[in-house]
Length: 358
Image 1 (cartoon, rainbow, N blue to C red):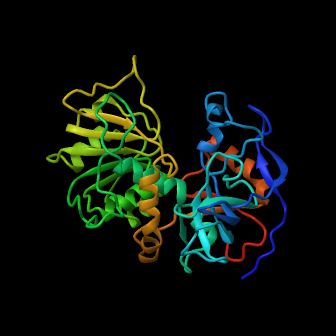
Image 2 (cartoon, rainbow, N blue to C red):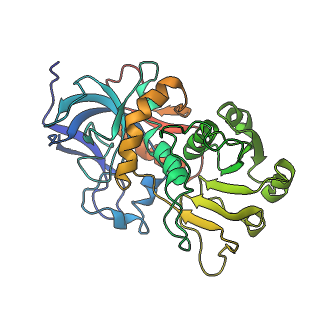
């Protein structure tokens, strides 16, 4: 199959440090060894993409104009040297990177061939673009090795969902997922269900309760309620070994005191130190992590090898999505809604022109 590829493309970029996003024209990159060129057709939006253009987060951007998109789905249009097992025309999902040639905020992008998955026919590209960053964040937060250094990088040390024998590997153990209606929280619930955890307790706004139970949560606690009191009712006799914080919900000392000795709290953002820091005595651990298949390359490659199968089987289901209009021009409005915390229970995605099933 031969596909016509232009020399230049539209992209949404940060032109200079702390500047607002702007549409620019830039070259279409050429795939090198191990790469594929993908026509981006749907883009998922993430709160992290707001953080990197602030003074606190801009340190991660190494060059300008900077491109920041991290969730994408589209069609392979060109293979790099040495790439096997893929064909031009394959529908794929992938996690972008904060570099100009690998961001998803453009019409064409480079993707590492070992860190992408084919999209099953029954899943639209819009739905597929909800998966990459949020799934990796949930999977790595649950499965990275436990780091017992105080408040360091690490995970909960669980069996990765893609590993042999992972199904029901943690059968009948309790887990708490804070912020279950977020995209990350939804994938954490699905993974916990596959691993056999029970009860699976999650917090969120009340209007998301029924939906979260359809994807695996066994118990729901309103995010404004007293979680410590609720846990004493739900699992009074069970030590709680794992708490997964999908949205950096402030964890109280009363809640920590219910966790088992040696229990692990993993969170998407570093926990406070000094004044306000939690008492993590009795061997309890609090750690934070990054959901990047590029920083955690070995795990990312392993997960993507199995991801299409898990999507086909329905073990991993894309989150609910809301499609925004305007193509690349609609991204900044969506990021603003995320910044104002106006999104709950679904993922904002942008479809680019020429996406037939999005």
